[in-house]
Image: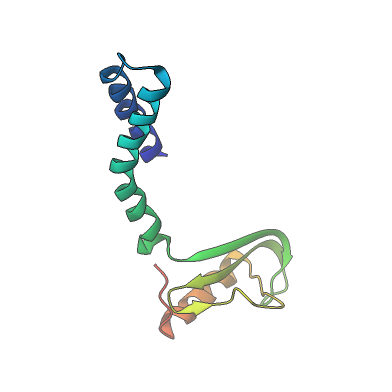
Length: 112
């Protein structure tokens, strides 16, 4: 969200600089300049290790550990753990998910 808002003043300044051109051409150039700047920001955001863990969250599941009905969580993928092709995924309530996450970390799974 912050990155998106930062692009607005940069594009506005570029549009003002190129205001003598047609509106379409000024917009194209402003977006090109924004792309040159924010490509690197986006590259950092989308390759950040903090975003490397993919989770799936569902409401009203039966926890695979404690059998309570609750919001369910499961880790789908990390750099060294992949359950994307899981036929019968196991969801856990928040407490059981935290315990499972601790066990995965203890077994060397990278979870930030």
